[in-house]
Image (cartoon, rainbow, N blue to C red; front, side, top):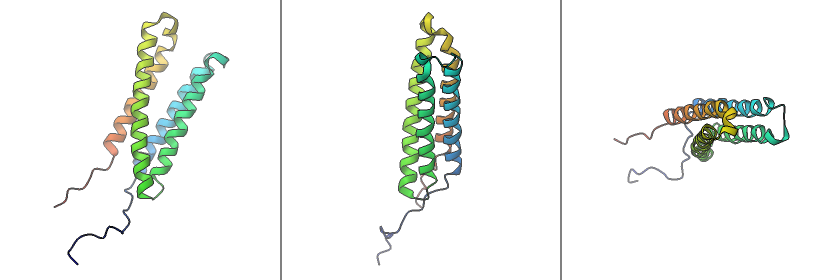
Length: 139
């Protein structure tokens, strides 16, 4: 043998507990915010999209969290990287919504909710970046 590693050996998924926890918490947070947004308007059919979007965000983040803790290296990688993409998307969307609601007098009542969702999304993304396992340097 020439000392090369065997390509057929399975890679072990890193410990994903902290990342999964961030995704579960952020998902529940966004679901709570979305449900609050609809409830604060007496469940008016015109604002139910707030609850649907919040729960949809939660489902996608929790699915990513489950993939990260599956024990499979491939699912771990898919879960972590898909979550990072989704979290980036959430930051962009809630940033846009915050800007729109701050400049449109009709939407200013939603500004505090969008600011909270934006801050929560930024914290979630920053936490995932901080917790994402780094590649080991080869010596």
